[in-house]
Every structure is written in structure tokens, then in C-alpha cells.
Image 1: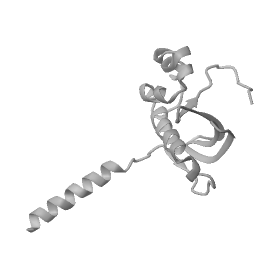
Image 2: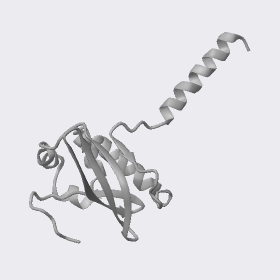
Image 3: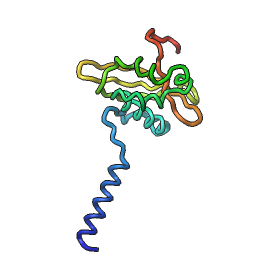
Image 4: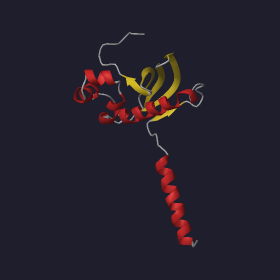
Length: 144
């Protein structure tokens, strides 16, 4: 192999490895979460969801919502309901709590320059796929 072929091969390998690695710009997770390995697919799905949602890419985040909620509220409703949300914040996963075989509560930290707080997020497994359960009311939801 000549030098040009070797450099071309290295460039192709570099490009392919960069494409295979998902970059998370707006989400993170605490490396000390004890049960993270058990919920890898949920963590990836949650991070993908929050990457879209934090950028107000509601066309994509809507696909992660529970199917019955999408049945109740179409995409236009979803977009208008969330239109006033902030943008460009960081979400950090800090705890995973199982509420049953197919219901998980994630404890997350919202961080933006002027604001930081912890909140919970429910995810439900349907046919081996995790879906986000959003609050579809402006009135606080006290269902435990």
C-alpha cells in the first residue's frame, strides 16, 4: 500500500467512527447511577428525546411520546402546548427509579444560566419500546 492509500483508509475509518458515535450536546447522565446498565436502552431513548425537546424539535420529540397520548393530542396541539418552553438548556439524568416492570421514573436536573432544578419524568415500556409520558395539563398532576 502506498502512502496515499493509507491516508485515504485512515480518513474513511475516522469519518465512519465519527458517524457511529452519537453526540449529546444538551443531555448528560451521572456516571454514578448504580442501575444504569440495566436501563441502557431507556437512557439512550431519554437522551435522544431531551436532545430534540430542548431544541424545540417537536416533530421528533412527539415520536417518543406515549401512543395513547398522541392519539389524544395531535402534533399541532403538541407543538402549541409546548411552544412557550425554554430552549438551549441541559438535562442531566441523576437517578433511575423502577415503579414496576414497565414504568420507570427518571430524576433529572434542568440547568440553564439563570435556573436549575430537579424534576421527575415517567417512561413506560410498550412492546419493548420506551415511551415518554408527558403532562398534558397546565394544572399540576398529583397522580403517584
